[in-house]
Length: 250
Image: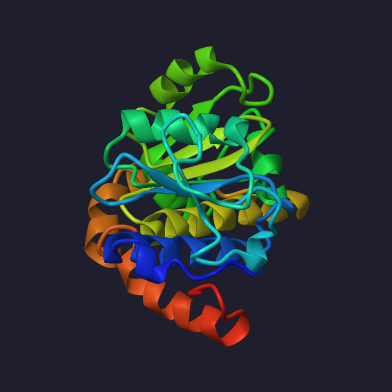
């Protein structure tokens, strides 16, 4: 067990640690994790440092104190008994560097997400969930395991100013101004993919949402959910986590 860092870091960093640890455990709870792989990162307010998962821990066991503090190169900047996977931060680092609004970057290899990422037409306008995603969706072609520095500018270019990024043949990525916003985005993105896979498996003719309806998305998202709804749902998600998998705050 890792000793608590609460009295050794700023209140802002401690809150970021709590939220990020909760996000890791919620990803595991909803079944989007891939053993110890993939990452969620957050920029520590007022600094140029980031928090990321200790490489080797399951998402369901991550705590606020076990998260590792790193720089934009993925190198540890504070003492931790856990290693970091610098290659895993390749995608996150370039997004954080290019998008100052992307305080949190979340990446998953969920079965549904990878399944749709392998489809030529990507996300189809089949559901209300897809209505949200398609309002701010970009695609990035697969270039192998994300290890090469020269992929970064292409990824940043493809993401642009979008909130959702489908990594072809790879998985899903969301960005947010907070952990809550990135998580709610991923919840909707994952639901979009799950619904699409199930609808396609039914074998019947699919009904697509017309473009004139899709064009209404930005205005309706702002009106109905106060953005993506992160600030509305996050407190309830934390209460749920406190019931089923407490301990992330330590």
